[in-house]
Image (cartoon, rainbow over all chains, first blue to last red):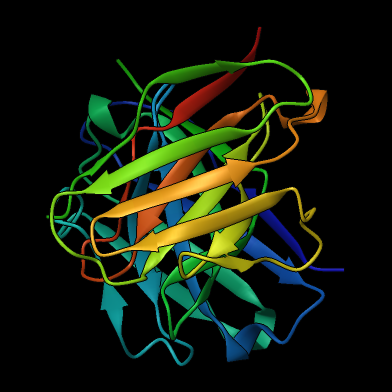
Length: 119
Length: 106
C-alpha cells in the first residue's frame, strides 16, 4: 500500500525557517518524481516544488523560488522541503505528492502537515 | 502562467448527471487532470490527461475536452460525491490549479 506521511509542520515566526519531511513507503521511491503542493486555509491548491527521480533537477513557481528548496534521500525513501524567509502568506497545509514525471500530475497524496507563519 | 477558471459551486440532485467545467487561459492540449477533495482530506486523483480514469475510481466519473475547455462528468451523482473538485494543467510550468468547484446536493 502506497503511503506518504508528512511531518515537521508547526508555528513559526515570519522570517524564520522550517524543514518539512515526507516518509514514503509501499512503492519504489527512487522511480518517481515527487512534489510539494500547499493549500492555504479555505483556499485552493498551489504547486510548490517538484524534484526529479535522482534529485538532479528541481522546479519551483516564482512565489517560492529562492526561498524554498526541495530535496530527497532515495536511500531513506524521504522527501524534504526546506523553507526559508517564511512569510504569513506561506501559511498552509503542505502536501507531499507522488508525481507522474512524464505528465506532471499527482497520483497519490499524503494527509498533509500544517504550517502557520505568525508572530 | 496558465489560469484555470472553474465555477465556484454547483447544486445537483442525487441520481442526476452533473458536469463541472474548467476553462484554460491558453491551450493545454490534453494535459488536464481532475482531483476530488473531501472535507478535511487530501486530494485524490480522478482523471488524468483529460479523459483517462484513474485506477479504482468509479466509472460514474468521466472527463473530456482538449485545448482550452474541459469537463468532468459525474453520472449518476451519489451522496459520497460531495466534495470540492479541482482541475490542474501540466502543459507548462508553473503547474496551476483551478480555484475549485464545490459540489452540493439540492
